Each structure stands twice: as structure tokens, then as C-alpha cells.
Image (cartoon, rainbow, N blue to C red; front, top):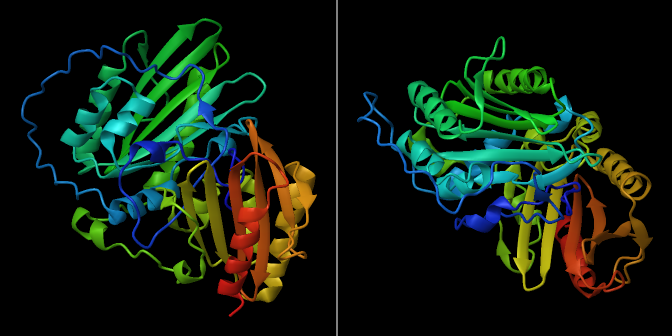
Length: 402
């Protein structure tokens, strides 16, 4: 299920800064994702960058940003720690989340220093994925980000340089069992921890705010999970990134092209990657695994005042498709507060509208054979405006019903 307002598919603020568009891959996220309270602020006058000596390591040049680097970011999503897995109360999606093919945009969103981007580029930055969740009760939040760099030594040096870049107002700290750079800020009624941990070619970063005295312990649990995920991950060799398959599960042609330009969230995901877009990852993991999940393809776009999200799921047979179709419809209404409505063109489809900021969005489902699809329309001025959905859902149904 693709999503909006930080619901099932996390809304992607990251895509606004990136210029790479998929040719044959597709996705758009929506929602009311908000900046993480207390995150490092963007400064109008960044500190003067340091000029390190020529690195005595042979940095492998990164491939140019392309569809391949975006697909690699989708692979990295699968091994970026799910904030909700460690902190179940942090259920609100916040900014910044999603794929990053531009180091300067990542710098602006995560660090705001103007110097972190050049550090990443110096050490062979390929691409990255980030997650952000906060606690709706108190706003305390957590960012996790994983970046792919040239080689293990480059990842180690990037961690050290980024930590030095962010050290103002922090004290150096240690987390038992975590081999990396850790910064702790105490005061103001909270602990704030930043951690920079290299794992092979990958650099894991976390920004975590919490109650006084709990920062290092909680960040330790988060990074232990993150390191475990990365230890089982093999990054794509740089020269093979441009040729990564754009449609590994054969779902692109049966996924509707929504209006407008695709965002960087568009494209294929495996199950774990999809869960980084889901509002309830634990429940959806169990549901999809139990029904033989075979693949997911997302196309997200924006045109004018409206945004669109189309999601296509593949299962072994109609029995599994029907089971997930029914379960998703129940979740939308009972758990996520959707209001049912009837779509004139497909009156049997489970359709729901939700309030989102100052407007509304709609979601409808269709299923046939081994395919289940959802279509979202976001940015509507009235919940009863079904004109766009009335065009899109029948078109998606026609693609999957043969």
C-alpha cells in the first residue's frame, strides 16, 4: 500500500532536492511529514571547511547519479534500521526520509553544515537512504541514515570527519560494542546523541533525542540493530550500479503511470525495503510474509496541486491476494481512521478518504489474480471530489485483469 501523510507509504520530502528521475521506475510519497524537532539546524553561515591532506587511500570513483544510484538507494532501504522496531512509540513519519542521490541535499537535510556533503563526496559517496520517526506525544524523534561510500577505509574516515564537523555543543562519548564516533549533548531536559558508525563500505548515522540519562543506552540499542542489518548487506560494486535491474519482478508494466513527474520513491522494492514505506511495519511484515509476498512496485508523482501514489503487490495466487486485500481494507478503516466512500466507476472497490493537513486524500484498492493494487490521490480540496480517482482506479484494474 503506498501512502500519504506519513501513512502506509512514507511521504518523501527528500525527493524535492534531487533531480534524478526514473525512466521506467516510478513512485510518489505524500503526507504531513514534519521536520524532526531539535534536529541539527541549517545555518546561514556554515563554518569554514577544513582541507584535509590528500587521502592515502585509493578512493573508487562513484558512478554518476542515475536510475542505477536510485535503485541502489532502494536496496539500502532494506538495511536501514526501522526506528519503530527499536522505539515503538515513535509512529509519526517526519522529515527527512527516503532516497538520497545528491550529497548536498542530504547535507542540507541532515546536517545543515555545508561541509558534510563535500566530506561524503571526498570519500566516494554513491547514494543513501534515510528514515525519520517521532513520538506524537512529546515530539522526540530519531533519524537513521545509511550511506554507501568507496571502501571500508573511506567509510571510517568519513565517520570521523563528519563527527568532527558536528561536534560543536557535544561531548565525545562511547557506546559499548559500537565501533564508531559518538557525540552526546545533555541539557535542556533531554539527551541528544549523534552516532557515526562504519560497517564495511557503509556509513550508518543516527540522530536520537530522548529523556535525560537515556541517550547512550537507547542509541546503543538502535545502532546494534543497524550494524546487524548492515553486516549481512553486500553493496553493489560501483561499476555495476548503472546496470541494476529496473524491474526485477516484472511489475512495472502492470503498475499504472499516474499523472505528472515521478519522484525518487518510484521503483521496485523487496519486502524489507517496502516496510520502510509502511505505517505499521511489524504488522505488514507478518501479513505479507504469511501470504507469499513476491514483489512490490511503486509509482509516485505530482502534478499541479495533486500528488499520486500507485502501489502494486504480487502474490502466488488469487487466494493470497484476496487475503491481503481484505486485511488492508480492514486496517484502513479500523486502525487508520479512513472513511469509506463508493467510487462510481468501481463501486465494489474498498475506498477511503482521510484528512491531510488542510485538505484530503483518497485511497482505493483493486485486486485480480496474483496482483493487488492501491491508488492514492492527495491534495484534494474536498473529500467528495472523486474525478481523478474515477479515472485512475479503472485504468489500474484494466492493467491487472488481463
